[in-house]
Length: 432
Image: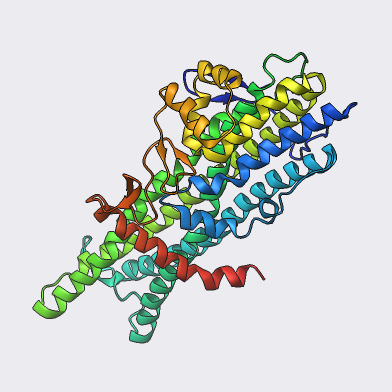
């Protein structure tokens, strides 16, 4: 069973070794009550997955656009037996794994095109600089017109611009898919911890998984490799500033006649070098993140299977009533709010013993436990803090209102919307 850390709310899952394919094993139940218990367990977990979308705020458009491709989540329905229930759980987790890998596929195309183009341009510029034997060591003006023919040099500028458009178009498909998987993982983490709490007092043992040394090393190294995404962001910022700066310098040189060719040439070389490094670190970080997604989803499969086996020894009447309350919790609470509940053993214990049958009684319980929460505008969902909509407006006094901090959010939202529109054609092509 997963162990819950009361100080941090983190959950420890069994190591899975080098296994790459895991299947949740249905429970061989011997009574109708045991079957009802397994179905109740599966129904609560599926409810947590199906309500993940309700907690989305600023990135809700990205989540919704990625969710449109999730067929298994949309196909969730009533189950008549344990086999069918666990098949659905398998399908949900497998589809999330596939979604993460699909996001990585777009990122690999983007970074591959970017690094190949940037290195080619750098080689051409370096060759032009080397051929000028009499140039000063700090004169990089030849990098602006490395071929020496107007049509060819204009073609290189067009290649740079095309690279920027294509890579920008390929950024959004990764962002929305990885955001979706990340949000599901956070919610599954909290929900599995709460479901396991329903079996805390039940009799039953769970066989421990063998611990792979390679798996332990991998789980330690991958989070550091994932930081490559943060490093790539720094290069992205430099690239974003470099293009307009080169344009401004060219305008000044054209209008006022200042000799800024060397500065522009140096900046062009640095921009392509920066884009090459950005691509490399982005690939490392995205690949590590996708591997973490896959490993975590595999661990959830193992954990759900073990919890299902524990249901064989559980008191069906006692656990079923707790599962119904958990299902209610998953129906009305955002993921950060669930994580807040998971972090407190006392809150979980009180929740299991409390009589909660509706939205109002649930809210009353959380108020008594002094858990911070905000009611959504439709008064049907609970957040741990006031949410903001996709344009940065914050929920205040039952309505979304303008805030001064929106000034910083609007440009980013506009960029995201632009990237979405640019990505639509490429996504359609890559799906064929």
